[in-house]
Image (tube, rainbow, N blue to C red; front, side, top):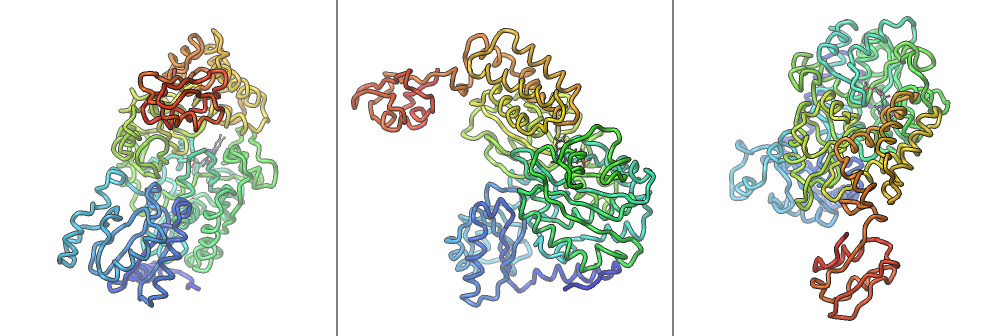
Length: 630
Ligand SMILES: Cc1cc2nc3c(=O)[nH]c(=O)nc-3n(C[C@H](O)[C@H](O)[C@H](O)COP(=O)(O)O)c2cc1C
């Protein structure tokens, strides 16, 4: 049970104590236990380490932390041995844990499992073992981390999200103290405006301006909301912040609440994020115990209550008006704006809604100042953005980079290029209703305007990398299929329009494309964009329009020649066996589920096209490149 914090000195005392939890003479082993870590076995690693430490009665601390971002290398384990550089081990297992402990006891290292060291160790013990540390790369020198700059994810992977004191130890809640005691609400809003912070949830609306509208709106009761619905397939930036550093969001909302004149906040988290919900619940409870939530926060007359809501389970519930309807217990369907939430929002009261990442930036801006923040990024897009880099790229995970960084730097420097060194074809940014940016625009800087001009958008930060084996018509169809299912159906243009776009795309992929289909897709897209009720319909045509814009020849090949150049659309391809390459090993014939391949041992085989279901198994198993797609 913590004490009620009233002054900056109280915070300082915890800060000093918190830092001491990394004791100079105690070994600390920390396991990354966000969802990405747990999915790859971090729970078992933590168990194994704790049990072994207990069994051997070792005076070691085994602790938990969130996600450092390099999800692909999970489970990650950080080892701090007094006098030695801190080492992060990758791809740990419960089996390896025992060997790791043995090495730690012997003050040795497991170089072959080490991903990076946290510092150079110049001031640390020099001996034959420390010589070997030299060979381990520095964390900030790894290609994955080198170009990153962490603001929203500043504490993820470095603190125990279950312990408010660890957040305070890294400077947490000092900004709230500064805001409540040294700044007026107007000054805070001015500072956020000057920082240039824009909404990280999709539309990129200037945050300070939004706050000022809500502050100025008439009414005694106002609300702030955190949008943690994160429904984009492949995106998990917000989840990671909530799981790894929930207090950064609470502190941002408290500062925002004070600035706007709200006494109540709601955090809306998608129900599929049980760990984020658990961490938030715990964080809210701890903040209440420490006097950072509830009545008379930090000894001032500012009071604030925080509530947690689980999402309604639909993509459209992330849209702000649908989200508020959902909190009110109604069906999560959007309504027409204006009135905007700042004027009439939750329970018809003025409401300010921001995304998780937007809120997490706020304490840093108050701490370091708008000048510092606005020096990062481009003229119109300030600060950093978290992206989830997934798809056909070598390094996948979460990265936070300064705005204005080039796509090339993200994909080829941080991501280290395309899997199997294939050709880079396109990157899809902005979630399901974003757009595909082609390889020739690889030098494009990542900022709100540049991405929109290229026919895509920043969105919430999903980035899906595609290689030469991707069919762009099929990609457009995939996203439209998602959006068709997720359209709430309230407005006709979205409900029927997306369905029709999907049907035309399906026809093209299945060889029924007709002359004029491209023009029809374009015309229908412009109608859906123009007249849909909310952003779902408003942006749904993006995948169609951007792929037509940059890959029109692929559409034409499907429609006119009935060919899929990437060899993806089943109805348009055939598998053949090259007689001169086939060794007659029978492997493909054995694996074929339809028994469509005939031939004797050591003689060229043949595929019966009438029986072939184009599953591609023969292509995958052939060791002699004898199976080809035509
Ligand atoms: C269909 C749809 C889904 C959305 N989903 C989310 C979401 O999951 N998270 C989010 O923060 N914003 C989402 N938005 C954007 C919100 O409506 C809103 O603009 C945002 O929460 C505002 O916060 P910001 O200014 O900090 O970005 C969505 C919008 C639409 C149209």
